[in-house]
Length: 188
Image (cartoon, rainbow, N blue to C red; front, side, top):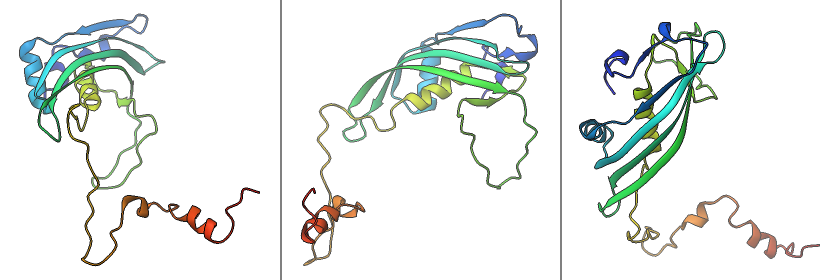
């Protein structure tokens, strides 16, 4: 979402969080908020959405957000445009860590960290923003309705030539046949 952390109404100021206790949250957006989220994420509808969890200290300066996201999304089928309803139930984990001191030049290359749950710790931890990101990642990229016709193989070639099929592009596709031709077909 394009809102600043403190504008969502769910952001927690890190400086006020107690390291001695767990901070629980529950977010259940109303119909208008779900409609806005559906539009932002390119969904036809967002029927249900609930994000519950907790934020707790994980060491001296790190914070851990764990939660459960439940949603019912409606998207058009990529093939027939018929509405497809999908139920999403997923666990969400984010570790917020302070700045590492590493800076990157604009346009330079850098490696992604192996742990994709690590987030940069700012002045706020915003469960709403985490919920939106988790929902965007969990929604199907290519929803298909159950009655959508099966996708067939599409083959194009020059007239008079043998068409290349998908199995012909696999690097080891012809090795068994070659082994049999060379007489290595027995299993001894």
